[in-house]
Image (cartoon, rainbow, N blue to C red; front, side, top):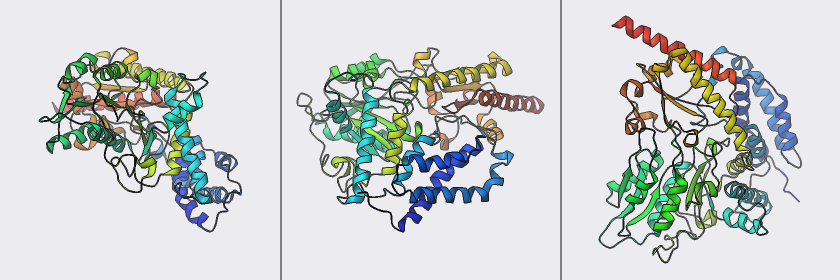
Length: 501
């Protein structure tokens, strides 16, 4: 029998209201003014007594009556073209999460009745991630359930992509024996996400490691043969960490080839796949079976605050490479130490609602379902580009990144606009078009991004580069209107510049 909900329901419902209400407001802002979906939450929540969901529904409707006028204010009509920064929490994901914000609030480590349902839900989320990673590779295998279970056991839930990347680096260093008289050596690229780059810089500053940063070409791509050349023959190289898809440009790196090189060299390989999930193939076969993979929930429809690190079973213990299990790993943690959650690999009580949300979000992509989304976004991205070229002229629009569609995320357009100040442009359109000058994780520093500098983008275009990224819910009307708004403001900058001269 499921445990009954006490008076705590009200407090928990208030907590979840912020999540549910924010999603409802997002729907309103995007013109989908429908209240009927709220009632579906109640029907789909699988909550036996329905008390929590009834209360949430009542609270949402009361709240919307109070803020209805502000929702219809024209200043809220903003086209969202920053899916690489974050996605909205998708409706299906939110519905899956609600019972674990209300009725099933127990700690999954608890042995009593309140802990059972959350524990089962966390396990199911692991299985959903495992099935996504496996893809079609063992679909007809008689041993399929065992394989899924083994992969599920290799998934560590974390609080964010930064934690997952830092954990991967820490585990690689902790398992490597090193070479006497030499520092441990890591190979990476010069356009990594700050979650990797800043971690490596910190370790370098402490004198703990040496790092080789491979340069990208003008299309923001790393050559796999350069990775092979960078791995040291003296055995000091303990890790290669290369991003799968660059978050600013959208270029896709040759991770399958790099994984093969690392395996032949007996060196661990980690890839940050945060920006790629749901946009290109990210199953094991497509990636060449890396040792460690980072994925991040809020990049594909789950909430912010949940991510995962896949650690291939047995990769941290390798007799021929001299690798041994990192200290305290599998007992109290790998990066965060404490109560031994996540089978002793990551301390801290699991964030059950968000983990459930991540599992649901990835299930919406499994079985090849991501491909229809990718096709949809590619068409819209190409239309967005053609609109800008038509309105501004081909000589004034510079596309940053690969020309080969197979080496580019289908949803991402990094475009330089000649003689434009991207910061001023984005400020002028920010109430109408949500976009960025590059990665949201780099934006605090200002100026031309390190990625554009590494690519040697001409200054006249680099200073006017904006990143436009479309998603599942983007429409043709959205990209047409956004292109018109952006082009209008670009022309105003040109006119003002001419006047000042």
